[in-house]
Image (cartoon, rainbow, N blue to C red):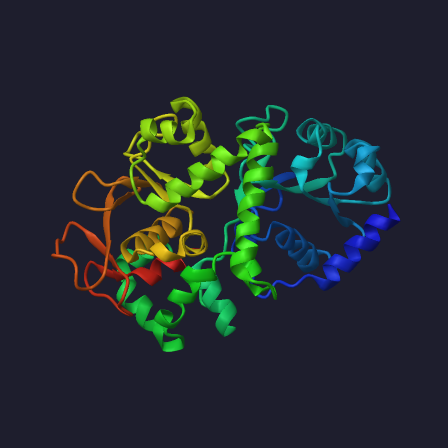
Amino acid sequence: MEAFYKTHTYLVEHVQSPVRRQLMDEIDWTHRLIGIKGSRGVGKTTFLLQYAKENFGTDRSCLYINFNNFYFTQHTLVEFVAGFCNQGGKTLLIDQTFKYENWSKELRECYDRFPQLHIVFSGSSVMRLIEENTDIQDIVVSYNLRGFSFREFINLETANALKSYTLDEIIQNHVQIAKNICKTVNPLDYIVPYMNHGFYPFYLENRNFSENLLKTMNMMLEVDILLIKQIELKYLSKIRKLLYILMHNAPAGPNVSQLSTEIETSRATIMNYIKYLQDARLINLLYSEGESFPKKPKQIYVQNTNLFHVLIPEKIDKDAERKTFFYNALHAKHKVNISKYQNDFCIDGKLHFKCENSKQHKYSNKTFYAVDDIEIGSKNEIPLWLFGFLY
């Protein structure tokens, strides 16, 4: 146990979190079992350690553990928790949960046996904490940690503390909000770097970002999809090829029959692979209202613009880029569908948006325009960058 405390103390004292994640204030920390999901690379480990640092410091009532530790090949989680609670432990932070075989069953046993204990655990975005884990589905509360928003990126780059806004606030008062923000920073100075490399926190590391993101993407495929979904390694090349084709064509409606021929697998398998790629936060699926998987999506998008720039840097289409930025920003807290009309998106079943530059559109008072090359909008024309302030 002392070795775990020693590691915990070192990690908490050395954790670097230059920008505070908004999710920290959105979680109801009174729940006894909390799952933090997120794709590889968005900072789940840092998030857990930052929570420990803010609320406990090196107080021994809180302990961070990682299932990478070989200790758990010979000892059960329940056994470990019993020892932790006997020493006064109250809050246990668990990382790399999927690497422990019976994690959900033993989390349930810990929850029932140790009512004074709070457990916060991280999980891959591919893990379906509630849908596929009957052991804990009635007791766990799940939250999603995403990559940096444009607002968080600006705050990090400028040492400001610009606040977030709801979609309703932006719709109703975007002119004044944009004016207030532009008194502090010029967002257009930061939008290109953000789209290029600002979504993943590891851009701060002293390593080549493109190579790091490519490595992360491959880990998503090899671990988050193959290992967690128990797919044989021989199918990895097919999934990699499918991802490249989808990203190269995005945003576009998938031709499943053609993909089936190119990948040399069945249509049903193609649809399953597409769903896994969505769960891994590599692509986004856009449906008509009322439709969802297993139906074929109307369009497939790259999950965020950083992936665009790393995987297909020679094919950066500005129209695709602005739509990808908008979709990624909105779907964090809103339902995004394809619009029934001559627009790009329908938000929450009622708001219709087109993503364009300021010279493109013919104005309609029934449509909102997310415009990518303006600082401040007017009427239904809203700066595209401002949607990066939703979280």
